[in-house]
Image 1 (cartoon, helix red, strand yellow):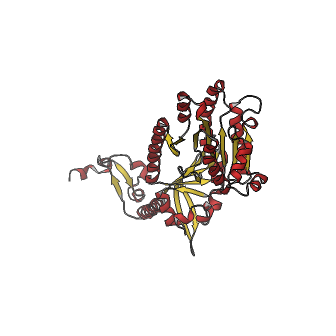
Image 2 (cartoon, one colour; image 1 turned 120 degrees about the vertical axis):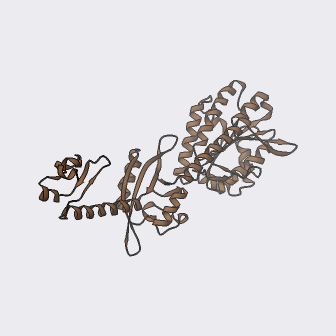
Image 3 (cartoon, one colour; image 1 turned 180 degrees about the horizontal axis):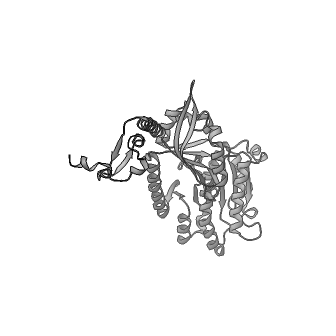
Length: 398
């Protein structure tokens, strides 16, 4: 699914999706204020929980004062617990030393708490001025790990690095571990993209395009429902099915519960859907009869359908994927053919004349029951044997 875009507040960047992780190289406190103040202003205005982890040259007191110049009601946000401005010692080195796993777990816990409290996600920044040379390798490994954490959660992150403390090697390490870097040149901010990350993102885009193309052009209907069975995504074939069998357009059905946009379906599929969601196991049914409520009459339909759980990277079920093929016309044709065959069989088996069929080798494949009353043979005595065995020798010479 597409990730939701958020306003970064930074003109050079514009909007960015959840999971964006960038860095800023700075020389002065004003450089930090240039980027971080509008960044947090946008977060506060868009219902995000914000965390600003400070260090010199812009300590907690100065950070708060700079933000308050732009966000006049900052105290209200602080009072309701929408933003925390902390010193690095209150976050990165609470135990007296840097604990990478502990910090990562804390970010995840903060995001969880933010969502539980009704915020849209977590917006954060951390200044690394406190890092000593001996800490650099461990912090670089932490940055490699935090990429996966931020990508899989509703987080936006900016890491700030003082140029005075970064050599060429450190700068290369930093850029490699972020989607892009903000650098000020001749009093103007510029974006530097990691060539390695850019190649990786291009590969991901191509793979996503291929995956989306396959899904979109698959003749079977594909729909993703969340854990409340709300329609969140569908392909072209599914859109056609919605138009054909429901009173809604696909656009109207998006965001609706399956039971609502497919009237009458609830008692027929609710147990099925819940079983897949709760067990995490795929359940496939062929020729499934689904009766939909129509205007003045019920519509009987038939489907070959697989319902599968959709798992997030942590293995948690986020909803169900429905892959379905409309077999209503095929079922009606099969039923009509079966009915026709039964009528023909009744006619043949009750007629007084003998009716039979043979294959290309002259072997009897069918003979009507009338044979017994006329010639004394039962059908079972004749079927499977050559016709010639039952012809009088005198007739063979004619």
